[in-house]
Image 1 (spheres, helix red, strand yellow):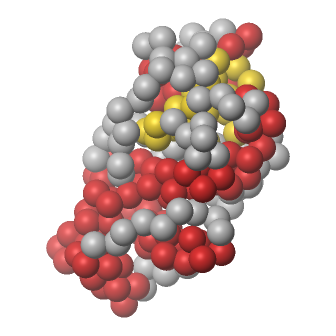
Image 2: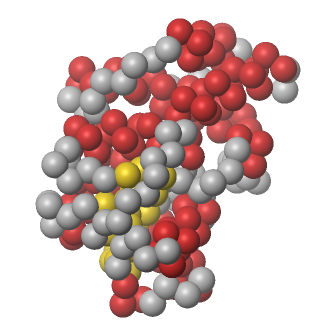
Length: 208
């Protein structure tokens, strides 16, 4: 890819990756996706003793419908169990198909007052933060993700072009979702807005 595209992508990546410092909580909640490294990060946090229970949430999404034999939540749970988390410490929520539903449906399991560590893909952190602050501000905890940089995020299933389109689409949602009542408003710096416009011009619009 051209240097200006990669530079713009890096700008969006830095904006989306907020990386709160995880605080002790009642539940670690892993948001389902195509990326099993989210489950791995949940395992790391559980091993650190930051929460006694882990909840995985997610049905099938666009990228996993034909790739996972079970729900995202189930696939993540199986991964976590294979890495040593006892099955008795894990809860499943297998209906959610977006971040708002991940948060709303999880609350029915954790209880509305439970504190949480939300674990998602790196590039989805800001959108997750904005959503939980709108939906559960009284119980919103920290938001984190697997610890790696932009170059390490693409996978065979989800290459760099798809990743950039996802970041473009999520920035668009950060702009429009507050008016719809889905998220709290987020400031968008000028350099982030400029990176968005460049990437739209270059055709990274599949997630809009």
